[in-house]
Image 1 (cartoon, rainbow, N blue to C red):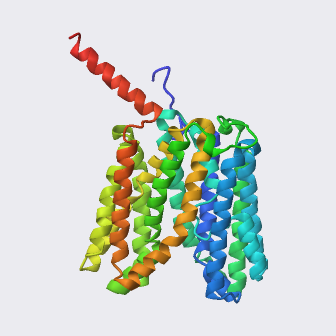
Image 2: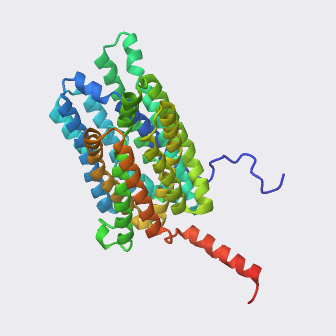
Image 3: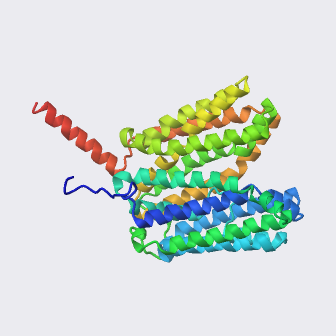
Length: 429
């Protein structure tokens, strides 16, 4: 064994303790959100909420997310990333307590707005803070890999959280009422968010390196403002298109078009989540070879073509196969997008970039399911698949055309090294 060998080196030793704490907190949060997302509407209905009130409650949480995403972009540098991470997590913990002990629509709605409660575990004001911190927790050449691990942890935790949503049924078997069992789930949600806040509390100040320290940031005056707003607009198109095929609508499509049983549908989506998790790591490795933008675009376009093909699938087995293939390709742009957006701006602009992306998504996504159902009713259930695929392909081509030559620092260095190597091989002309 050589003197430089490290026989006890951990597989993820290149990620700092701060990075591991952030990833662990992300997994804990998404597990908690996944566990209550499945039961939320049923629980609110049992409390006496109407369908309109349930929809309004969910929408109010999305409004809170958009408002906080805007404020985070302005004020994060002055308040500090760690303080905000802890504060938002404790706010979610309070929301769990409110859901467990109150049946007041007004109180719960105010709390959902104040804590930016997410019923789906999707966009959150915490996410831009995590994204801005993660680049400081790993070497620059492994930045995409740390984002892949971050997303794998979230995807796996969400799937496990969905399985945990079956616990109320087990508690009912022990003699608890259905409402009491669901309340216990929300108390568990509270405990998990307290645990996440503890993880954030122990993150060191090194994870905040690069934040401006200014009391507030005006995104309109940042040097990279054109890049920030252009990318956010493009990602908004992609988010709107993706929102048209929410999991619940795709599930309903399988059920109504092919008569697939609910148990089989659950297995289909479990398999699709597993494939998506695997693809995240593949995306990180592929990006190291062909570049971030190329990975984002040339894996995304085939996934959109598979969506369009689903609209014309005559058999259930073919539609399922197309969906699973699409699931493997469709998420490969997630860690690559996160890595790219954090690398093409200055460190002090990362929060502004991430929060603007989240704000755009929070604004456009709520309209997506309504648009999909209108197209469904006006034409056929397959039209949303075609429209989504076409919009996503348009987004990909626009992204490639506008940013294929905008490289991250390490991509530029690799290009220069290759050019220097080719020059040495050719010799003087």
